[in-house]
Image 1 (tube, helix red, strand yellow):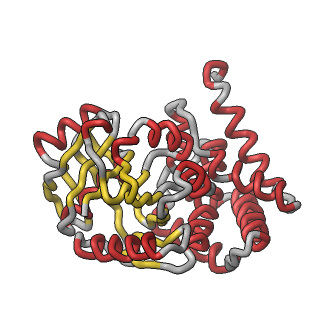
Image 2 (spheres, one colour):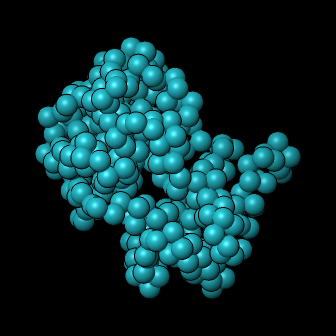
Length: 312
């Protein structure tokens, strides 16, 4: 099976490497030309689970050079999806299956609008990655399930493709599983991202510092409760106590982590706030559910990212 990874930064490169190790045909597609050229000529240097190896992968910075794929995995940031897909139409045949492994809420809605007649998969990655240098990545993979996949449209084609991809990830050395209820997993991860990304970006602190401050923990609790309430109105049942316990345990293991949105703010980049706290606030407004904590986090991040040139 040929996989095209549209958006091959740290996570896209790692996903591509694992699928290639699992015996699949993979091409990485990303405009970061230095990264693509380094991999093309020297292979991808992958550090994962205390092992260092080089994985040979096809790459291209120009999507027109990639040719069509059986499955296109979307790993660009949510606000780049439309432009990235429109610029890579050559990847998609009539029978190509689309898969989003993007962070946040609402990505599947964009893809359903763009591909109303294509099978669509969606998944969650419970792992992190770092692009340490052009052509080199480090994957942080825990002991549990690293990737959860499911079908958005519940068609036979997308469900079979998701199950096949799970098998390919296992063959490549990463634990993955298929779920009938992928939205529950999408929203569960969105809780974590909503709690740590926006607040840490605004406050300019790491996750441990946020959770150790009583007002920081109160904000986390409020954000979580709002997400649980909004999700319930959408028919997605989340366990507030379990989510809080998981986050506290995660912070104990890796609390020094500076979330990606905090890094975006540090380097004055556009953030994915509209796909996290902003999306939760928007869903809340549609459903008549008050979401003041998420709304204000979203507002503050938007003000910051739209005022970089005025900051001191």
